[in-house]
Length: 320
Image (tube, rainbow, N blue to C red; front, top):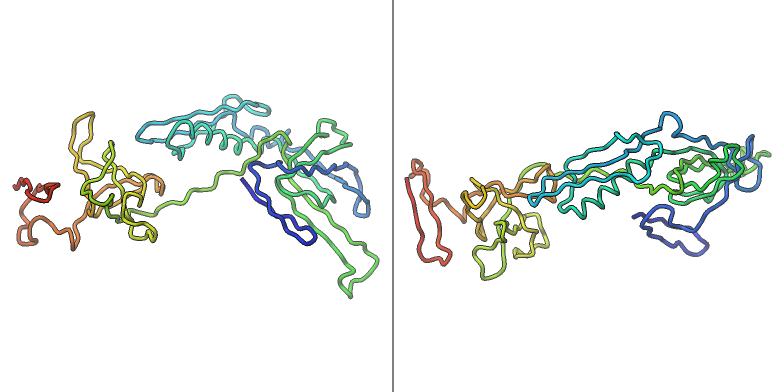
């Protein structure tokens, strides 16, 4: 999605579009060689095609994204249009930044559009003030008839001169406006390259939370809810975060060891690949409120496994 503003007399409307080229404006650009600064009408004196030379094959024929989601997912997307492409040229990326295959397939399609958007491009010059990124225009009267088609503008640089505005330069020069632009085929679904995702620099401290009246709160995977100290709007309840996975000392198929962090416990949270959308509990810590089971350093030689009863009455204890 993208947005743009239009400056009209007495109003400045804003528009939001789902894709480039969705506006109805389609000015006609007529190719004409020579100096056109004083010409009237929409003139395009230069329009060389790029893509028949060093830019061939710039787009990928296929894309494969893969992510190590704990529920398992992998997706592959192939382009439907292979013009100017090699069938063996693929783009592979990890992590794919998705959790389920349906969303991964759509995401890979967007990524493939972005990779192939520059496969056939052109740069031109004109005096058409109506050119703007996202709009399309129809080129006519080009000697190469294959270029007389609809093109989509992806960037425009406008340059204008009005010598009459400066008293010391008020000569006979006229007011002129020209621009240079870059375009792709009008049938191309142009998408910008995906920006880098924000990254978390390191682990963080959080507190296990849950609904009122519960002491242990988890789902079928042993995941818990967390409250981070920087969260100004969290209410320290079951809505404070998404479900967060918990690292265990041993995890196999229906065997291993498990200790679910209880509400009020302080935990250390890491982020897979630095991705803030993939938190995982990797440690637990004592603090001034939740103190160790024995006085320290008086009993520093003891190795202890001591569990608390959920009802708060008795506990079981194994001490070495």
